[in-house]
Length: 317
Ligand code: TMP
Ligand code: MG
Image (cartoon, rainbow, N blue to C red; front, top):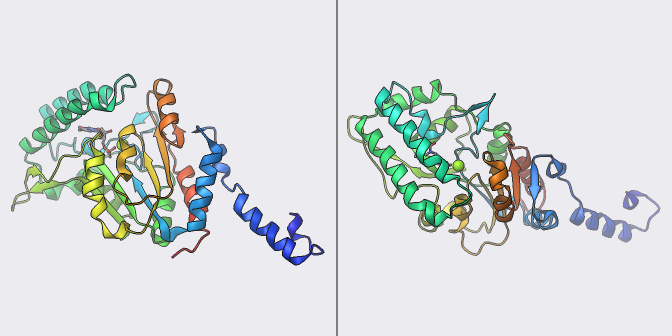
């Protein structure tokens, strides 16, 4: 670099160094084949602005199933938190069959590129309500959940440890906002040893009776297309997230884009969407909706690179 040449007048060198710092693109991961961006320049400008503000002004809001957890591994689907419950320790064969039937009916609707979120909404309420009723009938035992998670094929995306540990070290709060089952989700991150003190979870939590048997689900039902309501009520109330107007949002559904709607006075919001399934049909809508789209990318490489860039500069409060 020219500003490193010793004979250049010192103030000129300083100005050039600052200029380089402000304009450099230090995220080669954005050139990966899996990355699609509507406007790369805007993405890089947003990352630079977030870098200048630093870790102290940042929060990360992420979906869980198929965002932090993998979509597939060796050609097989990885179970979601609901599907981890498909274990004879917890539910019988009849329940497994019924849950599969519901998945086959409603999942295609959830990802149907030809329907709007409003059209999908009643179907999602129906799906979640039916599944939760089935689970309650099974009288699931709290003390069996950990074993079911251990026996499952659940997997977080490659690079998850760098993601969780890095955020913890930089003291950046991570809000996991999931329409899955909160108790199962917590167990997955606990067993992966990344349930650090900076992690907050909003999800569907099971309500157990005094003998530890499932009797209901707590609070307002969260499904893929009503996350906005949870964001405005529950996320907005979390004091740990206040004073952090810059947001890195990660999701795999268009419904996940509303997860930051509870942030008061947002400054810079960068959205990253994992496009796992029905790629050709949904590519256009994802590129229009998310700032960065990761196509069939089972890794956290890009989010980790963005975070490295943001947390390595700024005030780091
Ligand atoms: P998420 O908000 O953490 O992604 O969780 C929601 C996902 O869970 C959604 O994509 C659909 C999936 N799901 C199942 O796999 N099985 C089920 O029975 C239900 C109700 C949802
Ligand atoms: Mg998801």
